[in-house]
Amino acid sequence: MADANGSAAPADVASTPQAGAVGAVPLPKIKAKKATQRACDEKDAKGKLCCGHLKRWYDYPKEIGAIVGASAEIYRCEFCQTLYRPDFSQPPHSYTLRY
Image (cartoon, rainbow, N blue to C red):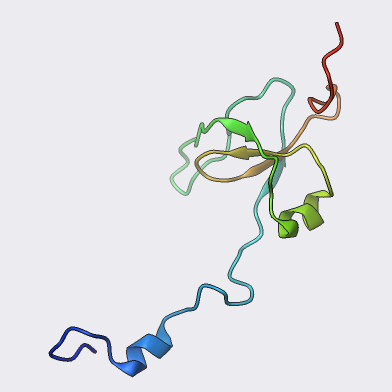
């Protein structure tokens, strides 16, 4: 409850979740990217496609690095943050182009 000054009572402050709580970060959904896929194909609860642009994710956190491996080629949707592994039938995009 709030008192006359508008500040929260100590009971309300203690009941709010802390940002640094253990287990607060859910594991992301990891999907396989198709050969020429550039947009997210994840559906929401209503069945609508996300269609967010898949962007290469270079600086992912250590928790994600433990799941996907060190220096992995990972793409992330700009809207729903679904992670995509590259299609292994295609050459990686991590090296210098050779013509």
